[in-house]
Length: 253
Image 1 (cartoon, rainbow, N blue to C red):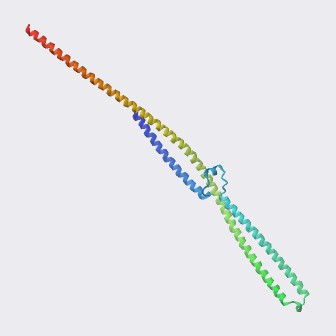
Image 2 (image 1 turned 180 degrees about the vertical axis):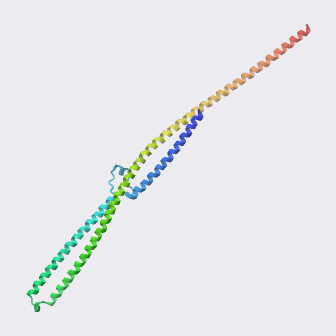
Image 3 (image 1 turned 90 degrees about the vertical axis):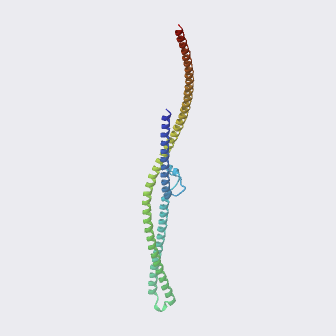
């Protein structure tokens, strides 16, 4: 019976060791998932708050919002550039009309040379400003297209990452549930192990008592046997003595 209990205890210890190894593997897997989540959502973000949806974390969505804000700003700048270009074109039309009407009214002798130079300078500055505005508008349009491409790529990437994070959340939840179940199993195995140890100790004590009783009984039997042997020897001596006397009497007759 003690050997059977010892075997059960050994099996229980093996199961416990195996369960501990599984728990360690689960902890390692959770660390891997935690590392991946940290790369995507940043550190110091509680996983439990993500699972319950109470963290307020937006992750990649923040980048998308920032890009959208930048795109909107560029659109506003582009609108301002277009508005300025329209104003410049309107000013140019007015100047052309003014110059045309003035040239029709004024004679060549009445045109002031300095005023003509000023008009030419203004025309040159207007064209240069218009060219700068056009270049800025093209640059802004290119930036807008670049950011739009980044925005679309980030949006697609965000969708993929959202699916991956969702899958990892499910896996983490499964691992947490399995870890709880494993902890309960380990607790049950430890309790069973303790019960087996107590049973072995009780049976060992009982076996020790039986051994002591057996030794005491054997000692008593040995003592009794020795006493009986002494009695037998004494009886044999008495019988031998009586036989000798009988034999002597027979000879005397």
